[in-house]
Amino acid sequence: MKKYLVALSGGADSVCLLLKMIEEGRSVEAVHCNFHLRGDESDRDEAFVVSLCERLGVPLHRVHFDTREYAALHKVSIELAARELRYRYFEQLRRDIGAEAIMVAHHRDDNVETVLMNLVRGTGIRGMAGIRPVNGHILRPLLDMSRKDIEDYLKKKGETYVTDSTNLEDDATRNKFRHHVIPLLQSLNPKASENIHSTSRHIAEAEKILSWAIQEAKRSVLAPPPSAPVLGASASSVASPVPPSSAIINVSSLLSFVSPSYLLNEICRDYGFTPSQSEDMLAASSSSHVGATFLSPSHIAAIATVAGSLCIQIAPKTALQKEYRLPEPGIYRLSDGISLRLENTPITERFRISKSPDVSTIDVNKVKFPLTLRPIRQGDRFTPFGMKGTKLVSDYLTDIKCSVIDRQRQLVIQDATGMIIWLVGRRTNEKCRIDSSSNAALTITILPI
Image (cartoon, rainbow, N blue to C red):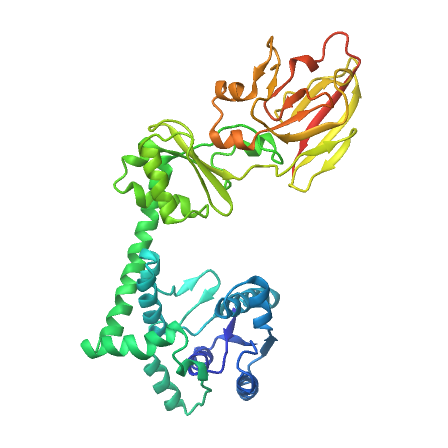
């Protein structure tokens, strides 16, 4: 029989949930979190839960949190801290005991409050869908029951419960909706709560169709990323059609979509961009503002070419935050998540030059240590392998149609004389090539993370 965890606070909702699961013959264990936010009242709730579980013969798991300390440490609200702590613990406990899912006691009135709060905040269609009955391993079996239904059920059962005194105060935004906004709406229409809940369920179903349509639309506007290698990734992984770290958007296809702004926002939100940023991106893309860049906490977006082609690439910020000295051959694991191997190899009959973009093979006698790994700079020049005369790195990257973002992430390795010996992942310097007079090679390899 499948086992379920029931989140048991001791309030009417969770007590009702526990009793109903027992009535249905489910194998359940209870879990109670003491957040130590209400002094003696928190301890009273815990004692009630312990007594209830002992009487019902239900195994109980208890955990204590220093919620205020956690909130201060992570710079989040007390409400968010409590949420993060409990759901993280719930999932850990679920795995530890092999439970199928975690049941929480959100009910219809909670959903109505959530929908109204989301409406005021302007969270869009997802927010109007309200609380989901199923969210991963979280189940909410009571979502179609009202608070009155729950209280009537417990009264019929003759079961007691505890009341959180903070639910009676108007300090929290949710309580203001509960005590003032919803009663006002019900004075206009006695079925207001019921209708809002029903509407949220319809929107949730419509949102499923919308999500499917958005995924289809994404396929029509997202292009495979360029095959240029990235430090820390193997050549095979870089060639993946759409790696999670980046996206290239065909603006011409985007602009032909029925709602370009909505689709672009749906794509950009996965990379941490705000709706206002996606609007600015769309405006810049429509006007072919090549070179415009936008930053999210984890990614950078840039208009790379004219409208109608591959225009916006979203990728991690620059792969390197500072310069690194490489004083001698060896393996280097750098703090930016980059690993390199430098090794001297004698050139024999069996020696072969690697064709992998992750490897550079040069004449060790034509370079001088220490080497330096760094981002490209304005004015950098080198002699690309197979060419004569020097060329600006920026011009070389333009010639190979390197995107704006890849330019910002591009690295070079130079020797002690300042000569760029490798435009990393792209081309070695002709002046360092292996020729018939070479007797030893320096092989530089980007190692997988």
